[in-house]
Structures are given as structure tokens and as C-alpha cells.
Image (cartoon, rainbow, N blue to C red; front, side, top):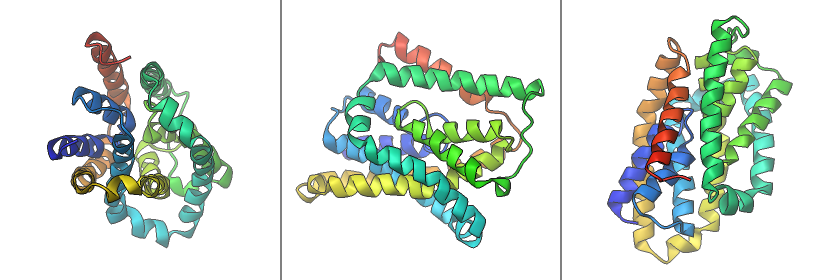
Length: 261
């Protein structure tokens, strides 16, 4: 990997980490389009720059999280199921989920269809999202954590799984997005630090690897900051339909171009 590739992947990560479109899926596809091999360093790079993206959340929401005791407790409850699943399935996630392209594509399309179904149900009055995240209960927080755990499969999307669950529970789109942001702090930080620790030898022996990781991380942080601010404004007046149609369109293009599966 070179600096140009790291910048491109940093942009892709920053754009997609907090949108409900699966950043991992986009990073894997982008890596293939760039002709990058599926090495241990590339896998680590893709996880660590996700951790860099949460710097944007730290800048925007860290004070909110620590000032609101109940919110902090809810985030902890939501983090627990994800941490357990991520720790137990770590090898499966990297060696099977990250390599099984047909599964990624199926999940990418399936979540897009769920977005469209959810918005249809809202329009028809079957769902009425009106609550703020401050109304979350412990059981709901745990359920959200379980939903987030499904995002270990590339294509699902951590943000997407959380927003879908919270909409079903009656929470507003923008409130669901905000909770997604704050839950990303412990979730992505833990995954990134673990990967960084386990892959420390890949960095210690190569100044080039360290440089591309730093560059990709900084680009990811910068882009993610503006995406987060945009998404809250967007969801306050728009639906999730655009993300559902986007998923379907991208899947068709990738199959047509034979990038996936």
C-alpha cells in the first residue's frame, strides 16, 4: 500500500463510517478496486482507520456523553453485547466474514430493503418514531447492542443496524443517529486498539506501514467530522430511503462489473 491508496481509503472510511451503508463493505470493495491484496496489514489498516474516524465523535459528542450519567450507562449496556460477540468471533470475522463476498453482498442488499420497508411502515402509520434517546431503557439498550453486534458481517452497517432497531422502538431518525455516534466511541475504539496491539509487529518493522496508517487515519478523521454534522441535519428532515436505494444501486453495479461476489 502507498500514500495515495491510504488517502483514498481514508476518504472512503470518513464518508461511510457514520452513514448507514457499511464502511467495512466499502473499504473492502475500494481495496479490491485499487488492486490491494488481502494481507494482515490491510485488514488491520481498515479497522484502525475506523478508530480514527471516531475522533470526530469525540470532538462533537464526548462532553455530552460524560455529562449525561444515564446516557453513559445506556451506552455501556449497549456496548456489552457487541464486545462479547466481537471478542468471541474475532477470528471468524476476519478470516470468514471479511473474505466471504457473497455474504457481504447479500447483507448489503438485505439491509437496504429493510430501510425501504421501515420507511414504508412509517408512511403508513405502522411505526411512529417520536422519542428521544434520553428515553432509552436498559433492556432497549441491550437490544440495540445485540443489533449492533450483527454488524460484524460486512455489509450490515453498525449505524444501519442501530438506526433500524431504534426506529422500530419508536425513536426519531436523528436521535437514533446521535446514539449511534456515541455508541461508536467505545465500540470502534475497542476494536481498533485491539487490532493495533495485535498488529504492532507489522508497524514496528516498517516505517512505510506506519506512515500510510497515520495518513489514512488523519484523512478519515477530517472527512468523518463533516459527515457527522451533515447526517444529523439530513435525518432531521429526510428519511432513510436514499440509503436503501443507494445500497441496491451499488450492489447492481458491483455485480455487473463483476467486482463482487
